[in-house]
Image (cartoon, rainbow, N blue to C red; front, top):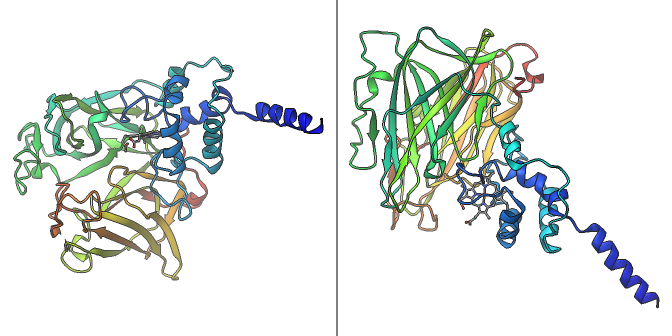
Length: 437
Ligand code: HEC
């Protein structure tokens, strides 16, 4: 008799404990999966309803347990960034338990349509200005990845203060990642409409023939997009100024596709009337940037059939800096990327660690509070490249020596660190980088 009671009790306990979709799982899916797994975004299917999730439970269990999804490559134990999108151990446990116990739907508690949730996660208002790349680009359906640089010239009545910027595309599924440079062209003798409206570096494009060199003199801003990123914004009084006249150079890394597809891309800008007291600066170190020739060992040539390590050091000589975002960049054979700085007093301060580089998931990492880099500190970059046949992303089979010509070709390599910063002010290190708007 006792056993029967015990059995009934266990059954009941199990029943009470069993998690339901709406109660326990939906909040996690909505905040951690749907930003990419929804219409128009980069992921291959939507995760916006119970049905979407219920029909893929085995698959979902696997990707969350292995931490393959949501993609997040930074080592949180080294630096925990503000834009961390990985699941906590509790969240993983909740999802896995729910699946193991039969993935019950339960009762819809809140009456929030999924769509409403997404509307409030965007910047919350329509853009003040939208720039679109001139040509509707056709991505050829021949299953090759490609790099294309688009030119968007502009001339405005006056400069504008920018408080947020967002990349948009008619079809983000076609895109691996995007970089854009806002170049100032104050000199009216330089024709901003010269040169073709895009340069295709992949399909017969010439390696050394950069048609936009003439525009690359005075950088107002440099940003980017990777799957899952929505918009970039800054804390109060911080931002940048869109000049009256200039050119936007937008490099789009397209994914391979089996059928021809149309791609329309551009950026949305959100302006503010408030003065920008503190203008952000973007600086790039390593290949294609400052200190390129100081990468060690000398000559950035990555031998075949080996894992090779490179390093670069540079000193911040002039002033104390407050760092907001950091963006490490390599290509396919990148293996790991670490950056830190040492102060004049020999303290070591971590900046970012990517122990298992994956070119598909790049990120502008945002510090939780302003990261002070004192004057006289030395910033260190330590990068490893796996140019062996064991690296499934190696673009060459058998492996070949890989070079860097400081351009964007993906079967070459880069070792680049972008820093987005402002000059330091007292107590910056206690300010959060959240956007107050
Ligand atoms: C930053 C964007 C992003 C987020 C956030 C994200 N995904 Fe994905 N997901 C993708 C993309 C892009 C792919 C397709 C590429 C791939 O499979 O690597 C994908 C693929 C998948 C796959 C198929 C994997 C395979 O091997 O084909 C599953 C399952 C999945 N995601 C589940 C999830 C779940 C569950 C979450 C939330 C816990 C999530 N994803 C969060 C972008 C994202």
